[in-house]
Amino acid sequence: MQVSFKGCHTVRPIEPTWCGRLPLSEWDQIGTITHVPTIYFYRPSQNSTNVIADTLKDSLSRVLVPFYQLAGRLQWIGNGRFELECNGTGVHFIEAESSSILDDLGDFSPSPEYNYLVPSVDYTLPIHELPLLLVQLTMFKCGGFSIGLTVSHAVADGPSALHFISEWSRFARSGESILQTVPFLDRKVLCAGLPPLMSLAPCHANSAFNHPPLLLGQSDNIEERKKKTTVAMLKLSKHQVEVLRKTANESWNRPKNDRSYTRYETVTGHIWRSASKARGHEKDQPTALGVCVDSRSRMQPPLPKGYFGNATLDVIATSLAGDLMSRPLGYASSRIREAIEKVTDEYVRSGIEFLKKQEDLTRFQDLHAIGSDNGPFYGNPNLGVVSWLTLPIYELDFGWGKEVYMGPGTHDFDGDSLILPGPDRDGSLVVAICLQVIHMDAFKKHFYEDIVEESLED
Image 1 (cartoon, helix red, strand yellow):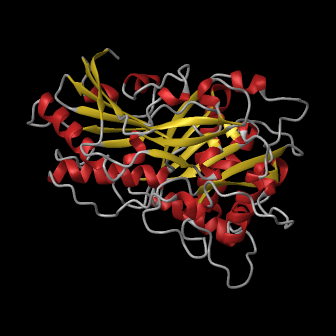
Image 2 (cartoon, helix red, strand yellow):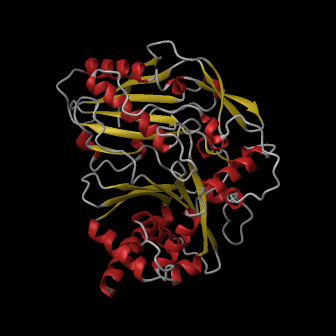
């Protein structure tokens, strides 16, 4: 794809905002602390390129007033820890043009070409020079355009990032500066900056901080990290999802009166089983599944509405590959539910205290994006499945109609996967998954053929 860059602008809050250092919570400082990209594509508009760009920049400068933390910078304070410097330095807004047309992108499946449409972050720079938000507007020859964003995960998790993007689109569309939901910016509700408690209570979240298992016979995962990956967007119809749910709920004995398995528990269990089959795991191969759980409503009391920061935690479901492959789908779903239900108020606070007492947080940080081999690795024999099923990812209208496609940006780490609702809101789902090239064809085969087999058995 031919993309020419026209300029990079710094967009600052349109009004003075609070300045000073803020402590981050422990959850902000572990897991993925680099930027996470998303991209939206829009059909041609009657407005000129300048009008579109000016509207986006103006509304961005206005929405950065209540979301002023995104206009700041991170500052290392040592031992794998950092703080948020609120200084109004601003975010980067990049303007670009492409000689391609939207139709050249086919079904918009993620590809290496997306690298030209999503802002790149230069991680060779000191962390205090990196914007927390970068936006790229790319105009296509046909008049359509894309908006690529990348947001620092150290400052905002998925729900928080989408809260910001949703408010920004409303500001752009309406021309007004009225928030639907005011961001709650005080991270002290998750004990940010507070000293650890002098407690001898055991850490209930301890197992979540252990590194995932290695392939049998290997002493590290360095070679697995080097292997070439590819991305697939796999669609599941409403009927296929219902077949999987029915199979999961009827194939494993749940506790009496327990609710049925959710779409996430079911489809993720199916992905996990299919991946172990495709990877050709030995029966006694340990495998871990990283599950993201939003703790906002699980806290006592629940976190304030609009809490802005990281409250989505990674928990780990484990199994032997042989059990996953030989037992029915309901077994995999039960392992996932068991992990999810660990996330209680006590679990979250116990994890915070555990992390506060660590001398250095580096080993808990996922730094794949900057080429580091440290931190947890959810590639072979493991997997990470993130759910966007309940997030407001669609119908993001900046004033020129809703998007024709929304999805993850660059997505090239083995084992990374997302479950998204189908864009037509018809009960269908889309699985975006990245696997090693040598495993992808076998994964697709098991992913779809196993559903057919379950349907025939029914």
